[in-house]
Length: 204
Ligand SMILES: [Zn+2]
Image 1 (cartoon, rainbow, N blue to C red):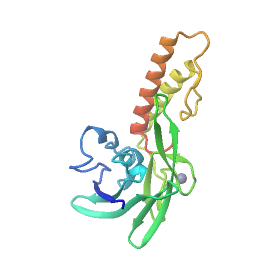
Image 2: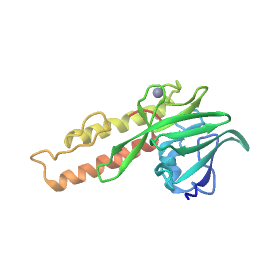
Image 3: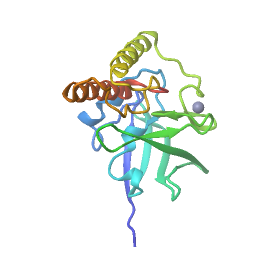
Image 4: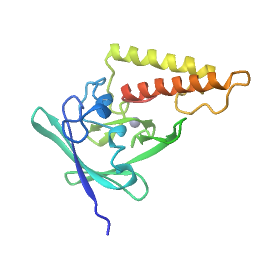
């Protein structure tokens, strides 16, 4: 018999995980409210405790001040999508992965409306959708930060032959580059991308 562990996650009105499990350094990256919308679900917040491997279910509560605004229970289905139950409704949100340069995978939501990859989905009338389908805008100052970061990543990426889409990994060391330089640039590229993933709320 498999015992399903249920983990409760509370998210405040800035989209930040509140206290207890999930507080602390690991989750700081999802704390910055780049998009002025609180009821969101960041895939990196869920990728822990074996949730995406189907080892536990999550009860997520979105708060406004002290009041619960929304509640949903999440579990992983056999086909690898996430089942989201709220009230009498149930919806499935697909997942996909991309490989990280230094091993492992990065998980992504597949937006149920446009089917594009995204790191964060938002509650809308119809369910959970990506930032673009939800029609949410970045604050302009944050947008320029993100754009700067993207430019920086592309600049480093070009040196090591990475595609401009910022998702696919560079695969081959440029012929005349020293191996050490390549590894250093690759590490820099990866670190910058982690920074981008940490701050971005929508598409790459
Ligand atoms: Zn979408």
